[in-house]
Amino acid sequence: MLCLNLPNGGVVSIYNKDIFKVLAKHTNPSSSASHTFKTTVMSNLTKGKAVSVDTGLLTGFAERKGGGWFERYVCHWTPLKDEERRVRWVVLIIAPKD
Image (cartoon, rainbow, N blue to C red; front, side):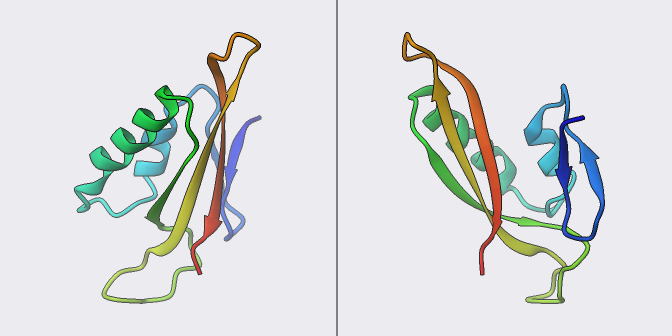
């Protein structure tokens, strides 16, 4: 099963799911950045370019900082192309910001 492993030991199934919706469930619901986040990622991937975007995720190990419980992470999106240089797959790596 394809999963998103959280630092607190939790597992979120991401097989056959929209990754942006999965990430939205673990980000600040009052943030208006989700549309900008998706637009930035999709715009770069459509051009075949890698992109890194900062985000805040509720992982279960967050410390109370700045009035919220979200930890800072960087999402690295890398397009993988086929022999015809078309983007076929995308590798997503989520790493702690600090």
